[in-house]
Length: 426
Picture 1 (tube, helix red, strand yellow):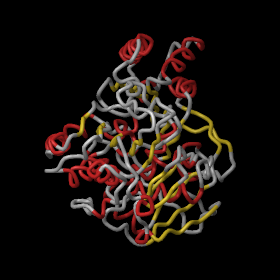
Picture 2 (picture 1 turned 90 degrees about the vertical axis):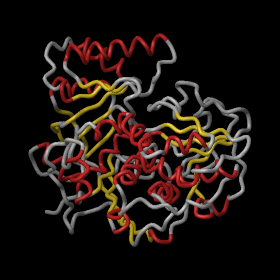
Picture 3 (picture 1 turned 180 degrees about the vertical axis):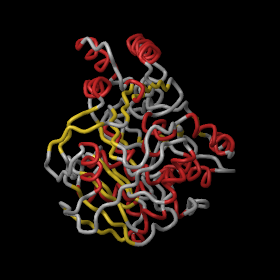
C-alpha cells in the first residue's frame, strides 16, 4: 500500500500501518499547554491523583494568552503553572517569551516526523517542519504527561499543489486566504492538508509556518509539508533532534487533489466578519482603515516585520491611523531590533507590543477599536467582536498589505507602493 504524510507519521507512532479512518493510540513526542487551558489540565491531574508524570519534561507550559495577566485569576493561573513546571520538570515559557507555536520550534522541541499536540487549534503550525501537529484539550495533555500517548482518528488528506512561484508582493497568507475562499471555513474539517509544489519549495520557513498555521481556519486536523534542506538547516540551527524526514508515497490515496497556479495569485483580504469571505485586494482597494495590526501566531514572524519595514522605513503611517506590531517571540523581537526593523516601524508611527497572544484575542485590552472603526490585521480570525467591539470591522490580510494600508490609510495593494515587492530569499 501507499501512504500519505499523516498516515505515515501516525502509523510510525502507533507501531503499525494505518489508513484514513483508523483509530489509533499513538506515542506523542512533545506536548504544549498554554495559560488559557492550563487550569483544566492542572485540575484534571489533581482529580486523577497523578503521582508520577514521566512525560512532564516533554511538555511545555506557555504563558502567552494572558500576557501580561489582565486579572487576578489569570495571574494565579500563572503562579500555578510556574510552580508545576518547577516541581514536575515541565518546560516553562514565561510572559514575553512568545507565542506557543513560535517558541516550540524555536526551542528545538520538535523535528521532522514528530507527533506534537498543543492546547490550541493553531498547533497545525508544526506541520511546517514535516511533523504532525494538532490541537487538543488541556485534559488530553494531562493524559500525555501521564502516559506519553493519546488516541487519534487518522484523517483523510487533501493534497494541494502550488504550481509555479508566488509573485513579489504575494505571500503564504494570500495562499491560505485563497484556500479559505475556495473551500470555506471548516471546509477541510478533520482532514490533513499536504502543501507541495514549486511555490512551497521557494518559501522561507516563516512563510511555510503561516501556511500550516492558517490551516486551522479550514478546520484541518494537520497541515504537513515535506522536509527539504531549508527545513533541516532551520531545525539544526535551533537545536532540534536529528530529523526523521517523512515523504508521501507517489500513489498515496487522497480525499481530494487541488492544483493552484501560484504565479497567478494576487494579494487577498477576508472581510465581513467571515474568514472565508475572501476577495482580491485590487477589488476593494480604497476602503478606509483606522487601525493596522501586524503580529499573532500566524504572521508575527521576522519576515512579517521585514515586509512592513520595507514599506514603511523612512515614511509615516497615515494621519489618524493607529498601528500595532506584536512579534511572535522574544527571539524575533531581538532579531528585529538587530536588523533595525523595530526602529523603522516605530519611527513610522507604529507601537510595538511585547510578544504574546493578548492583542490577537483582546485579552489584554490593548487594542479595542471604537464603533465603526475598520481594522486591517495579519491575524487569523475576524469574528465579530474579536477585538472587543462588535461594532467594529476586521479585515484579514498579509503583513505587506497591512503595512501598505497603514501607510495610505486605505486598503492598498502592497505591489503599488515602494518596498511592497520585497521578497524573502528563496
